[in-house]
Length: 535
Image 1 (cartoon, rainbow, N blue to C red):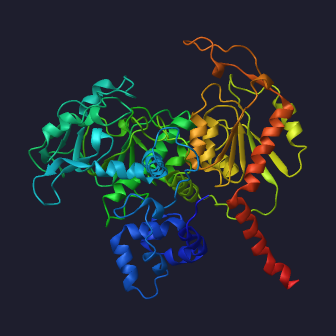
Image 2: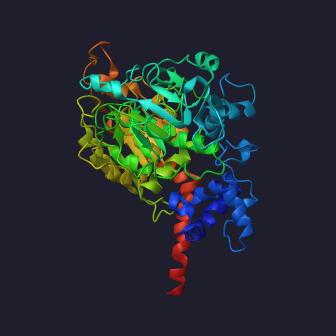
Image 3: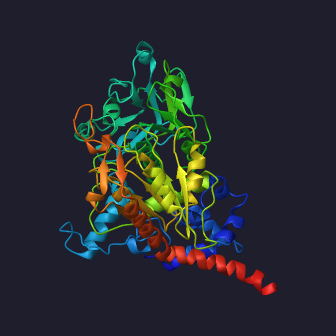
């Protein structure tokens, strides 16, 4: 495991940072304490202010070269967290260096940097006034950010009975405009990914130049001054797919922040989220939006019938981009651990008000067994397996039915306070993103989809195990997909009890052997030592 000296320094100064940040703008941003130094170094006016302040406790970080990984002059070995590339690339890369660089660009903060480098002015300001409009986009319209942009939703009054989810004609010619000069040639050359969830091409293609500034009437029926992120959602009923939305929203905040070196608002929760659907947003995972916004979530129903001018608007990375994260992600073999996924976990836990485990009080390894309540992919002899697991010394097993009746924050609290996550192939395994750094995942059976959750574990830097002996697992039947016929995802399974226990204990051993787990145990012992010395 590669953890730089900067990571050690961050750990030592966490409490100091927490105290120092109270009452200032960084505290208002509600960043995890360990992220504060990276944020400060990314914003020149913060770092300059700290240098001028003799009592600034953040001074030690200003000369450490701290950077997320997408900034200029930020090499991988100095970035937030260096990936591990101990395995073979299997022909993907010629050298270890190229293997690391490839993984970093595919799955880490290099993913942000690659898109940042492709940003271009699609609509250039007519003048330098604050009333001028502007729209800058990344290649293939995967991400755009604009100023004083008008969206015309008046014609949607005629489509109230139509479900607009995944529709590519929500906007029509002339219904998106800016008081700026549109680069028509560049626009037409960037519309390759004309798909609802792959890019913003279906919407941005209709961009036109407005004759007058878009700052109020008569050009606008409504002016939104709150920074707004307009989101296209994948599938809000599935944790795996909905977390593609949330993860890319977090990545988009970094991308937006990377272009606003002196603007501190990208991570602020005082922003508006507008979901590109005409049905009210409802999801068991709705608390996740608290991570990003303190305002009620809007849908198209909140703006229908109006010409809405947005003072500051972002069209974030959509969930199903070609070579996006984490859906459709090609990963070079032999590498694991993404700083971007690590930072996402820290950010989510902090914003949800859940503690980050930094110490482990004893050698009891906590295992969460996901008990599926769906029609398919249930473990038919689950009770026998759980009974056998609970007889194992040093292992605490919790059976978790992650249904809509279980508050999501309670689910996160349980998983983030555990060490091993066990379950059959399914969206519930996405909870692994919130496990501690030393966590392990045991996917009981991947149902012939071997890469989905093994790749997710790799991205998070977790140990991963799956079923090894096909003769010791028995399907209830051949499974029956309504369209594809026989399919292993559409049946239930009986697992050999002894083999299941063996593999769970293998995951337990991986946890105990992890350097971060051992460090957390030592940290707890160090905290207890002064109390014992006083006796």
